[in-house]
Amino acid sequence: MDAGRVALLLCLLRACLASELEQAPPEADLRSTSLYGRVQVPGPQGGSRYRDFRIVVHLDGGRRLTTFCHKDGSFAVQGLPAGLHTLDVYALGWFFPQVKVDVSVRSGTGNIRAEYADRRSKLAVPLVLPGNPVSYYDQRKPFNAWSLVKSPYGIMIGVMLVGIFIFPMLKVDPEDYKQMMSDLKGQQGQQQIASGRHKKD
Image (cartoon, rainbow, N blue to C red; front, side):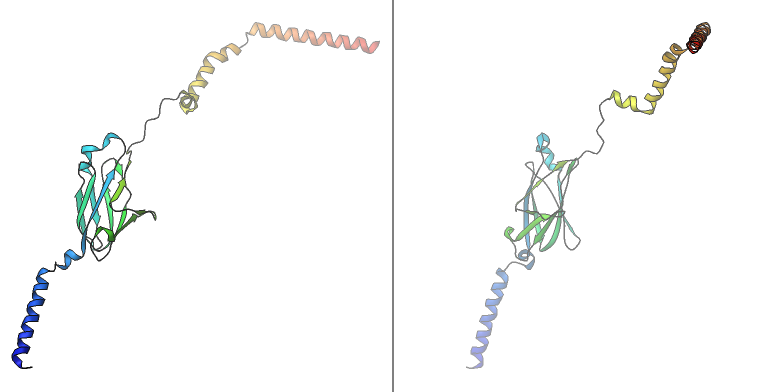
């Protein structure tokens, strides 16, 4: 084989490699994917308020991807690279548990694994994230008369009422007291006389 044929073959091989490189997508596209899901909150508080729900994915390298929900609660995180990430949902008045997202090297939603960060509970993809309402203030307790009576103020008021109304009724008049004492002494004297007679007999 002469040198001219070798050079021609090399040129054809180079042209084929160049065309394949032009048709192949960049490496970043091969190693990134999209994550789809939906948030759910109970009651009629959803609807248009879903637009205020913010989805934040903390990437393995320290970066963040942020997106917002649609009116129906669905969301999509585009350009999610391979690695282990965490997903948080931020919404005023609602709590969502943190989710771990593991994206494999190859793209595609079938290569995404998700589970709750606080427990080993796997999630299906697309994600369905239920939220729970959060109360920032303590609920006011209804009025309870018995709790008022048991309080220190109730005890003080009760002692004052007893001193005002009950103690005066227990007070004895001096003349009545003298009459009671004389009657008691008379009864004691009669008992002594009767006991002396029994002894003589």
